[in-house]
Image 1 (cartoon, rainbow, N blue to C red):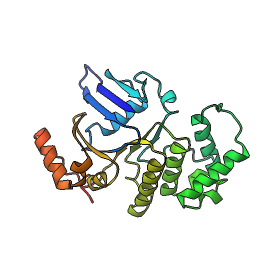
Image 2: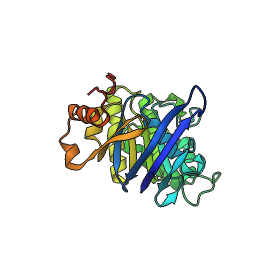
Image 3: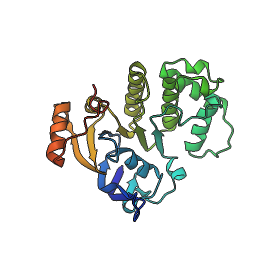
Length: 266
């Protein structure tokens, strides 16, 4: 499904601000697989998602999605098949537009055979209401309200729905619950797990919580210095603890993981 082969990226090369953000990174994800990504600040987690989404072109290597080479495809073309959520609930929606209008934009952008300025039909609106009802937040009764009136959790749940309204080939989640309170974060994570499982969506999820990474999805990837230093799945992952992950990190890199309170939290 997703193949990343030996990609590298250096920002500001040849200057005092030169920074190697990705270093010969490779990753293969199967259809429907959810992999959690953990690592310290600056490890390259978000940079890898940006490379996949087309926020910049890599210096070397290749990125293939569902058999198609997208290494140099522009980001707007990738967005038709790649859904994405960010840490900030304010990103991903247009606050001055209504819930229905936001859903319509997402639907028309991603739906095959729909022109960008097509009209939304009554059937489409019924679909929006049906999907909103599944969130369990009562948003199906507020479709005419501006998104700017929603809470952070409601906006993030709506953004998740917008990203998966037309099932994407790949879903990128960049610490999408980090800015939410614990209760709301748990609700959004439950929605994420359900939608990804029901629609069999291939997913990469960056998380700040190592315990969460071990409990959700199929694989745990740990990054450091722009590369993947640990990749565990199956029975090996099932029996792992946070301490086990830390020990494996030390064994693989010869370094201690930064004692980041958020990263190591339960």
